[in-house]
Image 1 (tube, rainbow, N blue to C red):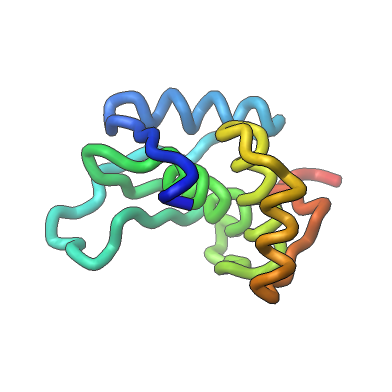
Image 2: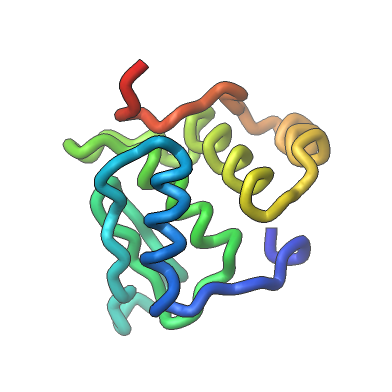
Amino acid sequence: MAPRDASFILFPAAQAMVDAIWSETDLRYPPSVERLPRHATATIASANRLSLFLPDRVASWCLLHELAHAMTTTVDGHSDRHGPVFVGMYVRLLVRYLRLDESELLRSVQDSGIHIMRNARPVFLDP
């Protein structure tokens, strides 16, 4: 994703972004944005259902990646990791917020042999 989007979010603005995206997805109780520990040298960001751990400056695509993790992880910690539900949510977020071409993303996913759930939704959203 990095070559397609060079935009980034500064840490002070990240919580408002997360809150807005969470709300637009009809979700309540967004995860909190916390600073990535300074000793985390091999990780650029991480997330679970309750928190996103971000550096001082994070690529927009990376923020959406972590948000897709938060949306596909239950409160008890069960995660889709990088499975079909996660990929479906991530593609939806990339199309909606970075305005990337959906057909191009889907073709790329298919060409890479990655499984995707096209109608993915947050795992804890009521049906």
